[in-house]
Amino acid sequence: MTPTLDPDRLRQWIGREETAVEQVTPALVQRFNATFNRSGPLDHGAKAPLLIHLCLAPAVANTDQLGHDGHPELGDFHPPVALPRRMWAGGAFDFHGPLCIGDQVSRRSVIADVAVKQGRSGPLCFVSVLHHISANGRSVLTERQDIVYRAADSAPVAPSALAPPAPLSPRHRRIVTSPTLLFRYSALTFNGHRIHYDAAFATQTEGYPALIVHGPLQATALVQFAADMKGRPPKRVEYRNLSPVFLGPDLMISATEEDGGLSIWTHADGGPVSVQARALW
Picture 1 (spheres, rainbow, N blue to C red):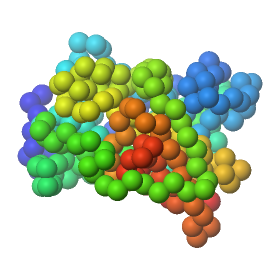
Picture 2 (cartoon, rainbow, N blue to C red; picture 1 turned 90 degrees about the horizontal axis):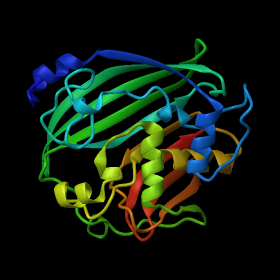
Picture 3 (cartoon, rainbow, N blue to C red; picture 1 turned 180 degrees about the vertical axis):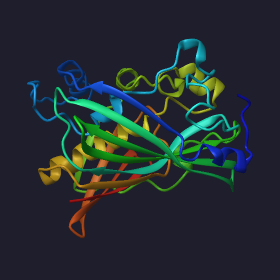
Picture 4 (cartoon, rainbow, N blue to C red; picture 1 turned 120 degrees about the vertical axis):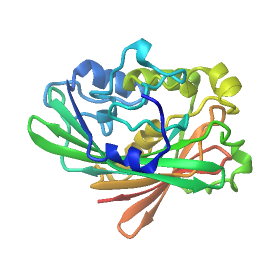
């Protein structure tokens, strides 16, 4: 399907749905925990790690149906946006209950909104997707993903030029990033986007200074840190992606208490805020 920036045509995708089903297996939980240097029970019925749903029932396309960047071609579920750079802009997680090992998980995804705007760097298209996650017929999670599409000549500049360095709170966590970590997370989520594992493509074709750390990887580490701080999972986490994190410096996560919840943010060590979030209990 020919990509387009016609707002009226793109908005025809609002309300489009897709569904997929997958079981939470001990093997997936083990690989997920190993990727994040965590451990946990693998018994049937044990609680699965937070945000493992991002690794379940991913969209699947044949290799010959992928674009040059490794993403499935647009125009089926996602609208055919004629802008090649795709990034997470923000979103929210509302947790209704735990996922457990052995659960049969269903994902029902709905295109909630499409908006074409003019940014400082050129045209932008925002696509909002709602994911309704249920397990054995019970609702466990509602997620909103806001995706932004940009023009090919609007690659981010080096992080140091974007904003002042982010503050590092007394309560913080350091995550050592590496090409292996990014590759493992891409494999877990069946994400073929080459900016996360193909350094030559990221730097020479896309014009980035290095590989990009996944937004969902940062969100997962952020939610894990919030739950560890409070000793229980949050009820809601809302976040905005403010700038990319490029491979090189370690990923830092900081948090401060705020109105019964947490203000929490990620950033490259020495870099600006990447993901700004608020967690509520």
